Amino acid sequence: MLWRQLIGSVELRGILSSAPKPMRTSSRTVALELLFAVEFDDAYANLLLPKLLTASRLDERDSALAQELSFGTLRWQLFYDRIIEECAKRYADEIDLKSLIVLRLGAHQLLGMRTPAHAALDETVELAKQFVSRGAAGFVNGVLRRVSERKRDEWLAIVLQGLENPAEKLAVEFSHPIWVVKAMQQSLALDGRESELQDLLLADNIAPLVSLVALPGLAKKSDFEDLPIGPASPIGAQLDSGDPNNLVAFREGRIRVQDQGSQLAALALVEAKPIAENERWLDLCAGPGGKAALLAAEAQVNGAQFICNEIAPHRAKLVSQAIAVVNNKIQVTVEDGRNYSVQHGNQFDRILLDAPCTGLGALRRRPESRWRKTQADVAELSQLQEELLLSAWDCLLPGGVLAYVTCSPHLAETNAIVDWAKKKLIGLELIDANAVLAEINPNLHLNHNRKTAQLWPHIHQTDAMFIALFTKTSG
Ligand SMILES: C[S@@+](CC[C@H](N)C(=O)[O-])C[C@H]1O[C@@H](n2cnc3c(N)ncnc32)[C@H](O)[C@@H]1O
Image (cartoon, rainbow, N blue to C red):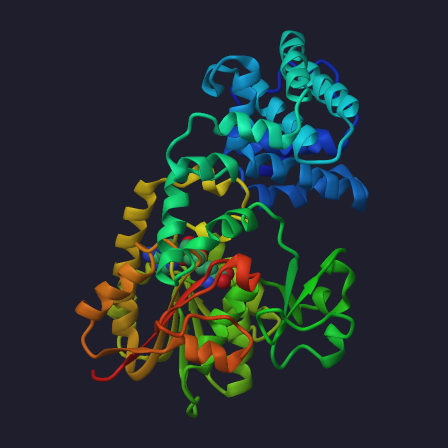
C-alpha cells in the first residue's frame, strides 16, 4: 500500500494482507490508508496526507473529500465509538481494530457529512471487504445499517444517557479525552471564559482555514493583493479555499503557511522593547523553523544577528531550509538546549523559547494528537520546559527579552512554568504580553487582567498559543 512506501513503514502486523485486488484509488481508499497509518504506524495525519494525495493523483475536489473523511473521522472518534458500541452491542475495544476503523469512517459519512446513506453504506462495506475481510464486511454492514437509522442528534441523546459527570458528557459530545476537557476548562477559567468551553471544543473539531504569513522585508504589498489581512496577525491572511502553491509568492518563499498565533508569538518578542543596534537573537528550539523564518526576516530588517538551535538533526535541516530564502548565512546549531548556556551564556538580547509541549492548542490541525497525548506527557514536558527555560535564561543578557511560548493552554505548561520561573530565576520581570500584543493588533480580545497572553481558536482563530515575555533586570 502506498502509505507504507511513503513513510518507509516497518512490518505492519499483516494489516493489509487480506486485500485481494486493490480497489481503484478514491477519496475513501486514501482516507482509509491514512487512518490505518495513523493507527498502526503512528503516522502524523497532517504530514502524511499531502504525500498520499500527491501520489494518488486525486483532483482538488476528491483530495478535499479525502481530507474531510479522514480528519473528521479522527476528530470525532470518541463520539462515533460510543454510537458503534450501541449498535454493535459490544465495547469498542472488543471490536477488531481494522473493522472499528472502517466503522468509524462509515459513521462519519453517515453522521458528520452529507453523504447519502446508501453510498456511505455500500462504499464502506466494500472497503471492509477489500481491506479487512468478507466476514468483517458483513459485520460492518449490520452495524452501519443500525447507525443509519437515527440522526446525529438522536444518537447524541442516546450516548449521553446515564452520564452524570458534566466533563464526561462534554468529552463524548465533542470527542475529546476527559482530561483534556478538564485542562481546557481550567485554563479558560483563568480568563473568566468558563462559559466558552463548548465553543472551544467545537472549534477543535473544525478544520482551520489555511493561514499565511508575509515575511517582513521579503513579501511585496501585491503578494496579499486579493486577501484580507488578519484576522489576528497584521502580517497574516487566510485562504478560504485553494492551494497556496497557486500563489507565486508562496512558491518563492516570501509568504509561508503559518498559524497566526505563531506569528503573534514571534512578533511579540520583536516588539517587546525597542531594538538596539547589533542585537543578537536566538531561537533555542527552532525546528521545523516556522517562527525562525519570521524571526530571520525581522532580524534582517532590524540589523540583528540571529542564531537557531534544534536538538533533532532532521528538524535542524528543516530550519535551515525554512530560513534559507531569507538569509542562508544564519547558523543553525544542533545541541540540547538544556546545555546551551554552557557555551553561549549571557550572549543574547532576545531569545525565543518555543518549548516542546503537548500541542493541545493545535488540535484543529493535528486531528489524531488528542488521542496520543496523556497526562504523563504533561508531567514529563513541564520538567523539560523548566530545564530549557533555565538554560535560556542563562543565555540572556541583562536587559534582554525572553519569550516563553507553548502551543498548549494546559496550565501545567503555561502559568505553572511562569510561577516557577518567577521564584527561581534571579532578576526576572514579566513584560505585559497582552499590552505588547495590543500594540501589534489593537483588535485582539485579550485579558488585560493578566500579564501573560493566552490565545484561543474560538476567539482569535489561532491555535491556543501561550506567550509570556520576561526581561532580565540584573546579571
Ligand atoms: C514547539 S517545537 C518548535 C516549533 C518552532 N518554533 C516552529 O515555529 O516551527 C519544539 C522543538 O523543540 C525541539 N526540542 C525538544 N527538546 C529540545 C531540547 N532539549 N533542546 C533543543 N530543542 C529541543 C523539538 O525537536 C521541536 O522541534
